[in-house]
Image (cartoon, helix red, strand yellow):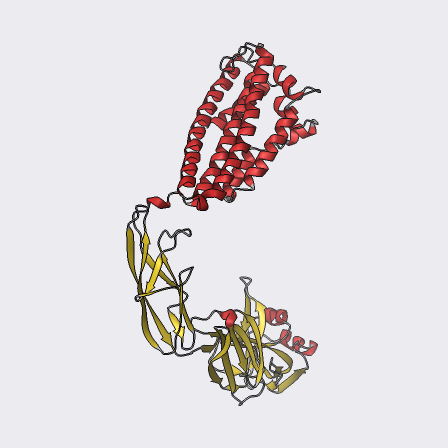
Length: 508
C-alpha cells in the first residue's frame, strides 16, 4: 500500500509540487519508516536465533552463521549509504542545523540535484553501483525464484523508456529537480527494501540449519527400504533413521540385539530364499538433557522368485513384417536396467520398457528373453513365446470429406458422384478399431452395367481412377450401382495380395 501511495505521489509531483503533495510524501516516508523499523526488529530476532544456534551446535551452524554476517555487512553498508545521503540532501537544503525529522525546505528542487548529480562529487552514480552490487550479491544467495524476482524488482536501476529517450541515466531520472521531501522518501524506500531483502535471506539461512530441531515433541524410528519385494539372489537394502536426525549426533542402531556397524545407518543382507521376512530392532540416542531415548522399529519385506512380464501392446498375436509394439517390465527393477532380446525377427528399443518387434517368418514362433541388471550382474528373468501370423486382408475404401468437413472412409453403400470424383481413387487399410494399418493400392477394377445389361470392366493400374472410369461414374444416374473389385495391395509386410471383397457403390 505504501509503495502504491509513493507511485501516486510521484505522478502528482510531475504535475504540480504543491504543499499537499509534499505533505503526502512526508506521510509516505513515515509509513516506510514504520515498515523499516518492523523489518529491523524481525531481522534482529533472526540474528539472535542464529547466534544461539551457533553456541549450541557450532559444527552444524558455522557456515550459515558466517553467511549471515556477510549479509549483515552488505545490508548495513547500503542502508548506511542511503542514510548519509538523506542527511546530506537535508543539510544542503536547511543548513548545518537541519533536522531529518523536521525538514523546512521540503520543496527545494536543487538540494538533491546538487548532492546526487554535481559534476564534481555527485553521489548518484555511487548509489546506483552500490544498489546493483547489493542486488546481485543477495539474489545470488536466494533459492526461491519468486522471492528473487521481487527483490530484483524492488532494487531495480532500470530507466523507463521515456527517460531513456530523453537521454537520462538512472540518477538523473531519480534525483534531477526532485524536491527534498521526495528524495528523502525515495531513499527511505530503498532502506526498507534493503531490510526486506536482508530478512528474506536470513529466513533462508535459518531454514538451512534447521535451528528449531531442538524443539521437536516427538521422535520416532523409521526404516526406509529400497524395495519391499526382493528377487531371490538380490540384495535387500534399507535406511534406518530416527526422525529429526542430526548428522552431528548419530544414534546407535541394533538389528535384533546386534549393533549395526554402519556410519550412515544402512543395513544390507543377501536374500537366499523366498518368503516373507521382517527387519526388527531398536535405536538408542541421548537427548539434550542427557537422557537415553530408545525407539523400536519393524519393517516387513518379501523375497520372490525372478519374474518378468512381456505383453504385446495392441494384440496377443504378433504379425510378420509388421512393427508390433511390445512392452516389458520386471517387478522392482527400473526399466533402464532391463534388456530384451528376440528370435525370428528384429527388435528396436524405443524408450523405457517399450520396444518394436518385427517377426521375419509367418508360422515360426518368436521367443523373447528378458534380462535385468541385479546387484551388478546380468540375470535372466524369463522367456516368453508368441505365435506369428500374416497380417489379415485390409478393406478397400474411398476417402472423402463429408458435409461437416470430416474425413470419412466409405466402404460401401450410397454416395454422391461428387464425393466419388473428389476421392480420386481407392485406399485400403486394416481398420477394425484395434489396428489401423495402411496398405498401398497397386491397381483395381470397376464393373459397370450398360443399358443392354452387359458388364463392362474398366481397369486401373494404380490407386487412382482412370479417365474412362471417371467418365462412366459421371454418366451414372441416381440409384445406379457399380462395383470396385480385384483390388491389388501390398502391406508393410511386403506381401502382395488381391482382395476378395468388392466395394459396392450406389449413386445417391
